[in-house]
Image 1 (tube, rainbow, N blue to C red):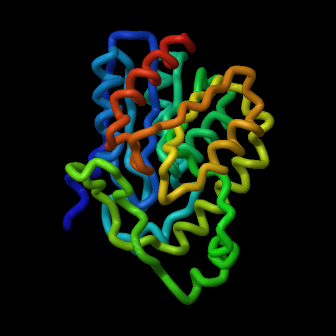
Image 2: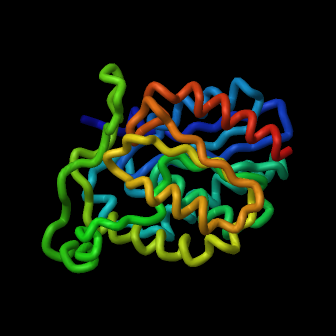
Length: 247
């Protein structure tokens, strides 16, 4: 499958003095965040949804990119939003959540953070061996399309690149180290049933982040890719409320 048509960057100029930077997940495409992008656009927000380097092509390309490449691409989109407004929130799913935290850490002027099943902390022993096995095993089975709604399918890679996972783990280490210095208001969504990222990731984020305003909303009817699942309307509604409060 040619993923390019499902991985188009999205840009919208709104009529409110508010911007949102949306960030998709690991091995995925921008299509996984398109519903939220459209809802934010209809709310009048300036919206930028870039494609992360190494995504939307072949999984081998994700083994050739670094977490710095992801951040550099997001910085470009942030600059576009900053040219339109000074009130900017970041919103990310999975790896996108980790990147949202890192962008907020690098830019204290960010107004708020929205995390959806965010990557932050893994406890499974298999992750201990990633720095080594990546030299011998280039990819493992896919993690994509963990969605409860049988009518939805995430367009993403059919393999999980191990060097890409290693880059994600490097990023998470930096994010965790700086969580206590992350002060922006944060809204966290966590699916009660998520087969990709454990609950501890959201709970750890909630506990360690330095925000004085923080809230965790449990999603009752979605799996990992909640932005495409039964709770997507709830996520959009609560996120818009949160964004408007940060203005």
